[in-house]
Image 1: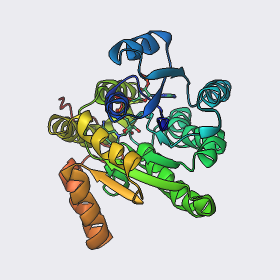
Image 2: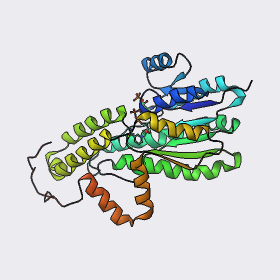
Image 3: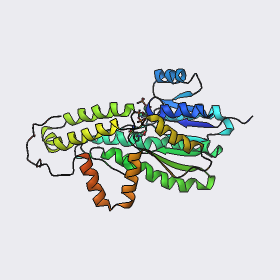
Length: 300
Ligand SMILES: NC(=O)c1ccc[n+]([C@@H]2O[C@H](COP(=O)([O-])OP(=O)(O)OC[C@H]3O[C@@H](n4cnc5c(N)ncnc54)[C@H](OP(=O)(O)O)[C@@H]3O)[C@@H](O)[C@H]2O)c1
């Protein structure tokens, strides 16, 4: 009997990653799902009747990446890995002009450097299994939004990294795939929206005065996006397609918003497209709040 092909998914405690490991397990793959805390490991085992193997790993902590690699290598032996899904992620928002650089570094550390570190660690196993790397980007690669500039940078950086890596790995038949989900209703929003607002409220009064109106209008735009977001299962279905495909494509999109963004990015003049996006987010028009202006006094 053929042995089950092995897949490692990062960020399996919640959201898209959690839905994905459940789906891949049902599809017959041998699944490893990374989590950061022992209680999440126990919950993942319970949710899958022990079928999905939790692996403790924080993608920004090299020691945990190295330990995870040893653990998975011991299980898969010479079969190697069929797929690595770099899914873990977070959003740290705020006005780019004032975002604390340590927060910007943290954003890039999780959504870009962490994935590079995990990819480096697991490439020997992927080479053994003639596997594939699936990087989870975002519709923001095509449709940037205000107040998530560092997030957009991390996802566009991941896309550029994937394009170059794809060329380097062609010689071993290892595919590199980007999957870009649109707005998806996951716990990510519960974490990022309050965190972003708290960050904004801690800014100096002049900074808040400059961005207050635009920031809160964009906040309402994000809340609308979330309400219309698709289910994590839908995004997981698209990623699972990339895992299972005999010859995976370079790019998969999940969600109508991402498709529309992709079409706008590809076919519209870029400056017109960005003006449209800005207006959609609520920052397209001059507000009269500028340098030297005081707070508007308007609240949400
Ligand atoms: N939700 C959306 O609308 C949306 C749209 C486009 C793209 N995406 C992308 O889809 C991916 C999954 O997002 P999601 O919406 O499912 O978010 P989520 O529900 O917040 O889940 C994120 C997962 O990543 C893990 N994670 C965060 N930081 C980590 C770190 N340093 N090391 C290891 N794991 C870490 C989280 O673990 P903890 O539970 O320990 O925090 C969690 O398991 C992300 O890359 C995100 O950017 C999401």
